[in-house]
Image (cartoon, rainbow, N blue to C red; front, side):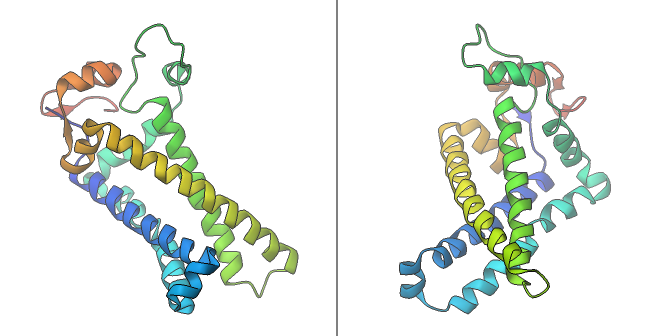
Length: 205
């Protein structure tokens, strides 16, 4: 087995996932009139939605600022934000041979960027919608329009992310227990496996 994610990284992931789930559930109830009417307590749901939205970046911020304990998380974030030729090659479905992907492939980097951008948009537009008095009407209208469409995009991304995790038990195991089989790493992430040694990670891995 090869260590892939440390405990702090997994806690940050699951805490963020839990908050995102609260946002999706409460947002769906508030967005669909039939659900909102059937469940009621709209004001309470709106408060939960707003608080969860404000807390969403907190786990990641804590992890990044956690000193030595957050070192591996920071390395992962740096690698997720680096795009190279292997990532471009990964996105081309007609690649002739396995791409020597690093710890994260092009699809994971793209998904991370979309999630990050989507959450940032939701926080900004949600703030305009909730604390709307200082803003003109066209700002509030525009924020509502963008917020609704970004919500739909994030729901699709979340469903796709969950389905992908269910289809790849090794990645699911990594986020639950921290490690992956060496055979999987050598086949699916050869670039990362090449710089990884048993019991420790080397370089960006």
